[in-house]
Image (cartoon, rainbow, N blue to C red; front, side, top):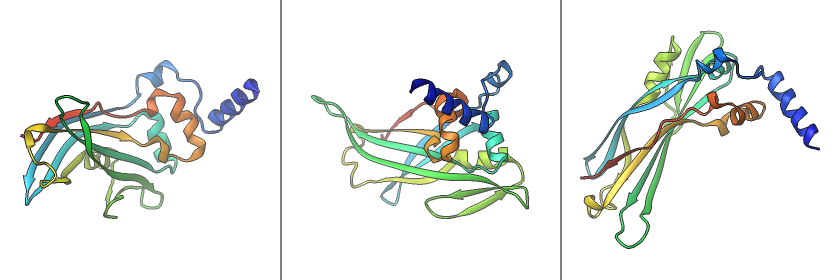
Amino acid sequence: MHRLASAIVGLLLVAAGMGPLSADARADEGRFDLRAIDARLVDDVYRLDAVGRLELSQRAREALEGGVALTIALEVEIFRRRAWWLNSEVATVTQRHRIELHELSRQYIVTHLGTGERRSFFRVQSALDHVGRSLDFPVIDAVIIDDPARYYGRARMRLEREALPWALRPAAILYADWRLQTEWVTWSFE
């Protein structure tokens, strides 16, 4: 049974063009960095500016060029510090963008999945730069943050592997160059 499962996974990887990771492929694994986070209070809502640098791996770029839409998420978690117990999670907010290549125009279409807003770009890096700048993103109402000194937030950006087509998911699980995400970056509300 184990051999059958291994053979099926191997066939899926070959069919998807995802052979073994060579030394050249390791050099181009892609990288996501979250460079700046700023939370500010505007009209009784804390809003977040997050600036990241997103670089796709060779495999992810090839998938995008081959017609696979990629979803990139900005995940935000808000916590309340507690003195005698574990910190409690107050809120979780996620902002998602989908990047896809339009075959006829050869433009990269970025869709904000929360609002439906669409923008097009001629270069993939321009589309990624747009996704990497999440500006004025509302994360939590000020009425919930009763004492800003007791609250903190953290954020990260990541490629949502679970949004990939089923045929690519085994490769996304097995190969590190599909695990594109930033480290968690923490900030305070003070």
